[in-house]
Every structure is written in structure tokens, then in C-alpha cells.
Amino acid sequence: MTQLTIGTELDTPNTSVQLDARRFNRHTFWCGQSGSGKTYALGVVLEQLLLHTELPMLILDPNSDFVRLNEARETAGDDVAARVAETDIRVFHSSRSDGERLHVRYVDLSTPSKAALLQLDPIADPEEYNLLLHIEEHTEVIDTDNMVARLRASDDPGMRRLANRVDNLEVLDWDLWSRGSTTVTDAIDERPRATVMDLGGFAHQAEPKIAALAVLEHLWRNREERRPILIVIDEAHNLCPPNPRTDVERALTEQLVQIAAEGRKFGLWLLLSTQRPTKIHPNVLSQCDNLGLMRVNAPRDLAELADVFGFAGDKVSRSQRFTQGQALFAGGFIAQPTYVQMGQRLTEESGGDVRVPLREG
Image (cartoon, one colour):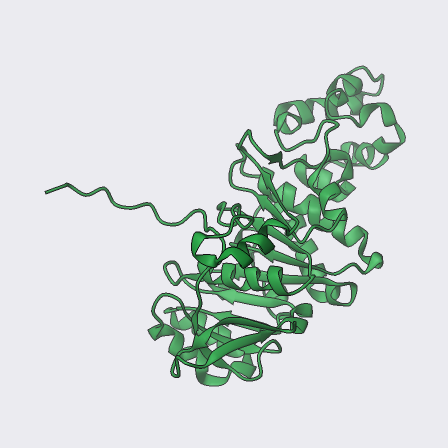
């Protein structure tokens, strides 16, 4: 099935709207300010891709919004519930004790990414950086559990300085590391229909970014296999901001810029969701050929959208008047720019707003 029903035309409610599933082989930008229904509506599209295509998806989920993608709603009907139940959807958690834990291997990171993690600069810290480049030659020091002890035991003073740096930063104490257990990249290699990475529960603010970096580097390293996958990044401004501040953010942004520029021919397709286009690195945004736009009020953001997505014409301006659940779709995955009232979710949504406590009576 190539047509995915996502809702009805906003101005003619009896007319259904479909997206062309084949055109998700281009990068997609999904945008809407807080309260627009952006995450709920994104779930509508992801469900349709799950039920009506064979396209594997990797979902980077910072707010645990998609961790129940494997649970059909009671209102979805028995047929949908059965199809969801038999679909291979794997959820990796960063904090919950039940279910699969989100782990990656330190050793799998590229040398520049390890340097970013350890705040090493090739110019300011030439000796330690050079040691890091060649440390893989000493296989006995790679394991995260014994790396510091092995480095300290070395006769090389540079090794001992590197040990102090690793120890002081405490990065090897993170819960993120696999320590011999299976990793999320192992699962992705099996290409389940959906792999959800629940990024929100880590103790250190850099852990979700390193988790994302490890996975994206893994996919890029194996790009020549040309195994299609849709990389869905919710709150994408956290991973590819226009002005990354830390070494880890810079490494992550550079990897996403590379995937945006060159990934399509290898089957690495992005779906980036965020509140504002100006929060995304321009070299990533400019590579998107599909647009899903919900309510956006800021004139600067509307001007940016009109400039980058010229194929939407002047229709982006109406997004200022959208109510929750209304959207504009434009680009390769729809015949013409169309205003849409999004349909209902078929699976359970997590996250959501916290209610204000009210006094009874």
C-alpha cells in the first residue's frame, strides 16, 4: 500500500488525505509550536507507516512520547490490535528497570567522538589526543570496567594523564555503557519495524546525545549496506542546533549534517520534529523535501519556512490560525499543498501535559 490516510481536508471534512509512503525516501521536516498537537500528529503518521509499509524506523524519543507505540488503543479495533501485536516494535528504556535497557558500547564510538566525550582537543591536548588515536592498539585497556586501572598502570605518563581525565569526568560510570550486554545497535542491525530509544531518563545531560551519536555513527559506518531506515528525531533541536555549544553537540550535529547531505542515496532518511525551524542547523533543514507544519505564530519562523520550503507557496501563513491538530502538508509525499485535520491515534500516547490541580467544590 502506497497511500497512508492521515486525516481529512480541513476545508472539506468528508475528503480524506493521503501521504505517498514511497516519498519518505526524502528527508522530512515536522514543525509546530507547543500545544499544536505536533507529537500526537506525528504518531498518526508513524502508525500508518508501521501498519502499511515495511519501512524500518528508528525513533529518538527524548520525552518518552512513543514508548507505548506497541500498545493499540481499545478504540482501534481488534484487527488493528492484532496487527500491532504481531509487529516487531522494540522499546529501549534509559531509566525503567523493566523492559530492554538502552545501552551502547564505548568502544564503538569513533575516535573524534571519544575525544569529544573526553573534552580533548587535538591542538590544545596533542599528547592525550594522540594516545586516544592509538589506544585501540592496546586491546587490554578498551573495556570500560578496567580502562582507568590499565591506563594508570602504564609506564607512559601520558597514559596516566589520560586516566586522570577519564576518571575526573566520570564518563565511564554512566549507565549508558553496555559493559558486555547487548546494545541498541545490535537490535537495529536486526531491523525491527520500529526501534524506540527512550532518551529522557539518563542522569547526565550528555548521555542521550552520546546514545544518539553512537547509533547514527553506526548507521553511517554501515551505509554501504543500503538497508533503508527512517530516522525519526523528536525535539530535533536538541541534537542538531544551529550553534552547537559543546564538543559532543558539535560531533552530533556534524554527523546529522552529513546524513542530511548524503544519506538519502544509502537509505538513511530523516524525519525531524521540532517547535521552530530556526532551532535546526540550516544545513540539515535545507535538505528536507517534505513539510508537515502545524501551528506556528512567530513571523521570523514563518519567513524561514516560506524561504526554505518554497514549494508550499504562501500557504504557510495560515498556520498562525491553526487550532490543535490542524496542519499543512507539502512536498514530495503529497500531490499538492494541503490543509489537514489530523486523524485519531491507533496506539497509546505517553507523555502529554501535566494537569493543573484544581480544588473540588
